[in-house]
Image 1: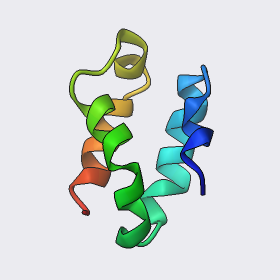
Image 2 (image 1 turned 135 degrees about the horizontal axis):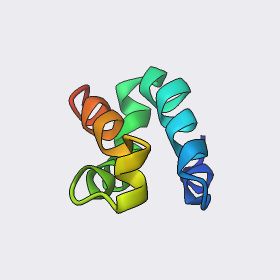
Image 3 (image 1 turned 90 degrees about the vertical axis):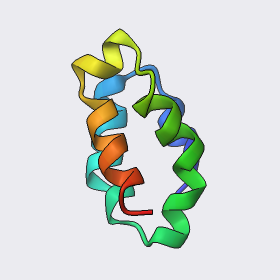
Image 4 (image 1 turned 30 degrees about the vertical axis):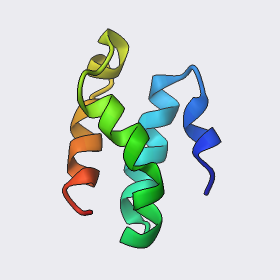
Length: 64
């Protein structure tokens, strides 16, 4: 999976990608998303907060 999937303008789509795909990847693959996940976890934008991207990002970071 490429990080470009997370460059969409749709925060709803990003939530789907994180919740349905990234969280289920092996840790060796998840680490490639760490920079993005960390950026979303702190500080999230207003829209990222609304879609709870910060929460799912924190959950995924916790698996690394």
